Image (cartoon, rainbow, N blue to C red; front, side, top):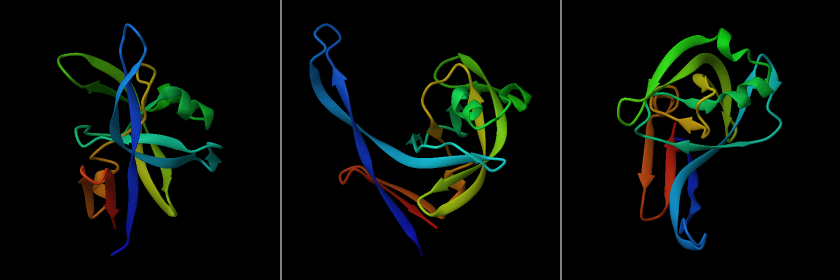
Length: 142
């Protein structure tokens, strides 16, 4: 069984008053490329791998950069913590993880800033997604 291993990426946690870095928080980040109708984004996107997210969710500007008419997608109400919701629009997209090409759906939103890979549309495309917190790696098994 083929697998890919990705290291967690450190994010600095700063003191809000002084700006001083107090500690680093490590998060599982997967670098991907996206393509829509043969139009590639010219750079890699670092996406947060989020086991708490039902679906893939990206900022709208990333889709616009490859020619997607965001609001022509299937409208979605996207919930998160608490009762708040944001508006998204679902599109069929090709993503590239390492040398692997995958067809999936991504919800694009003008109200969201961090590219997120979720359970339906990413996790379910693999036989296993293993988080190794002590080693600070995630393993994707095909």
